[in-house]
Image (cartoon, rainbow, N blue to C red):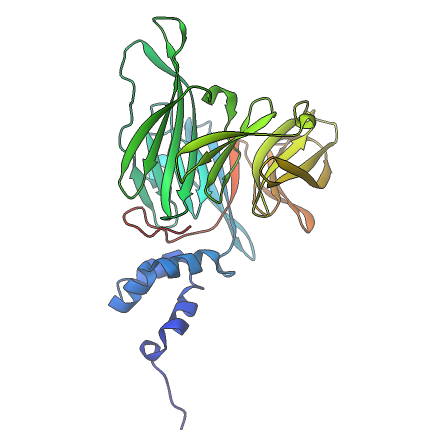
Length: 364
């Protein structure tokens, strides 16, 4: 006689292994079935195991602007034997009246959303959690005008706490000059609060927004406008430093990204449609020491790069309003989609996550 085993009788480590293979939607539904399952799915160790499990597929998240509605939105490409695309407006998904957003990330499945109205929020697309951050206005003088800003999004390594970095340059209409010093605000998720400090030698107007997530091992990075250096914000002690890059970068175009768990610069000649373009990937193996790892291409008829995956994927917009993804290992090219009703703005490699914005389910 064959004996049957109830699922509830299985050892906890086996249940964890089974659950870690399920998509986020199924796990959220399972939380209401049993208290033990709820506790398991809420456990930080399980959340990290699920995020990094081979069965958690890499999806593609494309941030864009729709011309017909004049609103920003996104398309999520799921890998299901073939690519399946679903498009949404942010306004519909996150239940907000704001219809224009910029985006930064992803970091452990979380995105940072912000706009020119100084609204800032954290968002987990998989769990549908959306957390507007407290209002942050360090300068209230009517003569000050916010003229330039950059955001960063990282983790404090010792606690696993998420941090948002906001670097702002103000123009003083009264003196008709830049206000000095630069104002740096740091938000901490566990306390849901901002703290402020000032910096005299760092300016957001000298920085370039990264094409994707550039947080690595306790530091968030931006490149300088001139490609002559990068800026590194230490999330452990809230300090910022400059790191020099090779002089050969200065005459080229470049984007900062991650490549195989190293900070990297993707360097290329100015893009001219009709001319072949190659991209050189340089990595910083230790502070200030850069090595050229690989040259990829040539590519033809590309308009611009829209983002990079941490394993060397490159998202390219080509001249026919087409979005391609090039995988550097193995070297292959795929068409993600076409955009005839708006503009591609950014593209990301993205994994679903159970990380919660409501409590300390931090994953470092």
